[in-house]
Length: 617
Image (tube, rainbow, N blue to C red):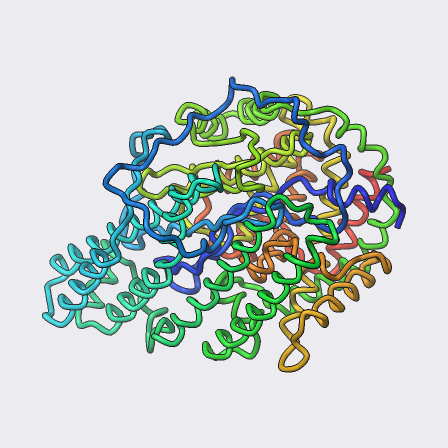
């Protein structure tokens, strides 16, 4: 690979990782409709193959523009006392490889009508208070007592609503703690609050799951499945024994403890160059040890849940995907065959000049605002709400969590966008990406959809911004290169991850994991220069296992929006907007309903190659 190309690898992905939630929260929808409680919207697809060139380092002389700075969040109410922190689950570290956890905010399954939009509350006026697990348990026990006492359905529903109110209060507090902590990772108060939420989330989710299983076995189940409440056949998914028994909960707690340890190590390494030998010998080695233990416990989790391997478990439990690991593996092989060779021939020098100028916060803000206003309708409305209520933070700070995400704050009925910018042109696409998530959540009232579907809206808006944002045309070639990088690099990561979980017993060592990373890199054309230790720089492996393939499949669907827009002005936007409030949770079902082509169709990747060949001439 050319030296210029190697240097460009770290640049070529406009941040895409979107945390949907990194904690295994259980959505209050049947397993067939669950979304990944693990990463929602962290805006950056991990691109850590090589050290970034100096051109993307933030310029210390350029201060973020105050004109678009969101108001600082209010301090928590005084009644909330910080507790001793135990490590956070999804975000304790500002290095590029970290990602604060984003709890899922399940929608109530029994709302008979579309929720009305609440009065929008500015972020600075949102109140935080630590939620008592004991209080939630009281509501939980009241539901169980109501089942035993054979309460009439109205009385029982009052108790169920009481539990859900406490549940949403908890996840609202979790979201606020996550955002505040991400704004300043040195703030010990928010660290403690975030850690408290992370440490108690498995217990909260177990209560929800066990309550639903108990309701499924209750004498009142037929009445509960009326259209007025949960809906027909809702409890079919909760027959038998709940998975969340004492053993399963303990295993999930063990996984959270290891994730917390990973973030603790990241915290210790905050001032160390993550590409340096000093980092890899000390902190990287410790992270690799943690990863070995994570793989072991995840294999235990999958076996206990009755699965043959962890990838199959994760596809069902975290993502509820309607495609299999075998289908994904075939797609990965096609990408390696048809796109990896093209990736090796791209002339990156044609876009490197875009990184020579510092991009300010106000320029980034203006890019996305112009896109939303030019597209109009619900996009313009959503952006106005985000701007007016200060539901975003795109300021630069060395204290911030060094990535980007979007999350829905359920009790306030609004999403929030967090970006720690690089002060490069990438910020325009990163903020666009996160606003795509914001618009989807705003239009659908935070309805949970699968990660693959959610990523369609974030990545799709990036493509559409090329035609609708002021200055978007200038970024077209960069975005096409980014997209090709995404296909190839993320597929390489996903291939690595799939193989790692096949290591068992004495084979499961960090040395063997290093070898797998290097071997997969060679297969994708990265030669012998790829250091196997670099896998620790990708947070998804630690926090959001089996997530990465979502970038690939959703990008394929999103690319079709760009193709539509190029064939007929407005066609891509129309397709985007008409699906923005989709209730289709699963990817293949969504693609079919939207009239798009599945990435798993034979010959699809050959078509994608031709698109890139044309765009990158």
